[in-house]
Length: 173
Image 1: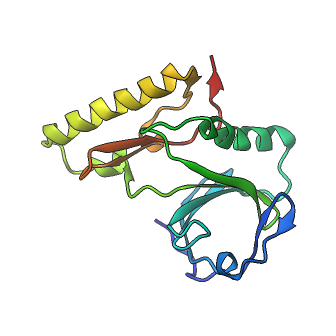
Image 2 (image 1 turned 120 degrees about the horizontal axis):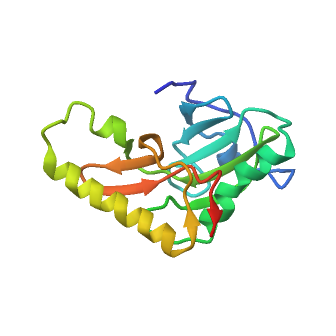
């Protein structure tokens, strides 16, 4: 994981307006993932009184189709209340960039969770069944996850729990 300074003194922007809540403006954050298109931060404190994830696009002025795909993740999972899907909290803007806030899950990607655990068949089977159950749940809601991969499945081996993530390009059947 990459890290950034613990303190961020910037206001959260939602619906184009500034949020003057001083507690929300001093969120302790840590960069946990970065791609060409987006950054994901873990916020230790938030307006929800629990750690959350803030996912933002890298560009301040992305093309409209990229914004649509980005917010598509929030819109799709907002309609769900499934065990295998991370809960959405809010969509808006942060530092003038499109942002979504999501439930934080204490977990690792499948690849990270099983690194160096070649002989742990019991954990593997629990997680395989949980992944199948999570995929089945979203299919029952007529949603197709177009990017099921080790990077888009979070697992907690202690709890044998699974969460599917990154619903940017999903669609309803």
